[in-house]
Length: 409
Ligand SMILES: *Cc1c(COP(=O)(O)O)cnc(C)c1O
Ligand SMILES: [Zn+2]
Image 1 (cartoon, rainbow, N blue to C red):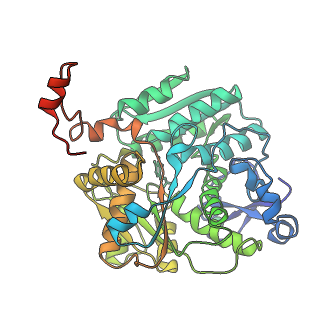
Image 2: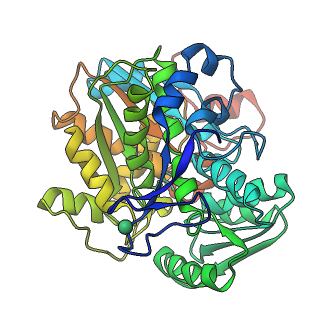
């Protein structure tokens, strides 16, 4: 990682070495990776990126780990024009970033790839995390690929698909009786007790978070090296949204994209909407809540990067919306029906929030809009089984079919 200068406190700017550190000892602010952007600008070109691997590693110059660290193929997912969904929502230029197509079915593969690649460089042999589900799936898979031991922690109320998609990799999956916020607190304690474990979103969080920037990089590259006018991003801890903003800013800084304004809007479930509440009430702080929503992957009641996400949204002129569980299911069905993409509950949150922001005029009809659909529906089947099923059950005869199904096409 020739372009990393070290780490720096986001609050007081104190410098730190590029080790497994995540909070400032002086002010407890989060640490950020600091890069030599002039050197990156002198080295990176559109052509060089385009000739790179079809994964997040095509942006290795802007990431804090080395590409030969770890690769399951995370990133470079399709950006698809969504004409039919756009027509339903009154949006002329709508696109979907389809992150359901990552190796373990969610955008978490981006952040885990970077965190574990860096963890291996730092000599860690054990991968760990506090997860709302998708993160555990991704850490377990990448650890298996890398030949690392792993211990991943989840709340005990997760969907069966997410439990199986971690357990299949054959090591420790620990189901904790409590909420994600309880799991996270436990993992913070475990991280100080087990300093040789790489908790990707605790002691490796500084590196982990950088992986989300690739969503912005890819989006701009796939639009012909132009940033969109508006992006809609789901919020759990707020890390993804914050880093998407950083990613678009960096593209301008290193000369890959012309300066332009990107509005950034956030999406939450009303059953866990602490950041949306703070936005609506005009606060800078985020008051923790106790989550109760089918969007379990977004159910973080005390979001670590909530204040930074708020800041990014406000500075960009975006908004934050929240949607009910019923609206989430409608959002999943709408995306599936119009675009052929089956998203998990977090995708339902994003699409339903997009619909709400579009009907309220916040997302404007002529904007070039990109919605980040961050996880696959096959892992949250429970959310839709009450409302979808076979049209009919028939005997294997023409008569039975004709009696059951009335079609004029
Ligand atoms: C974790 C997750 C998010 C949001 O992540 P944060 O960076 O914590 O805000 C969004 N979508 C899915 C599917 C996730 O698993
Ligand atoms: Zn500090």
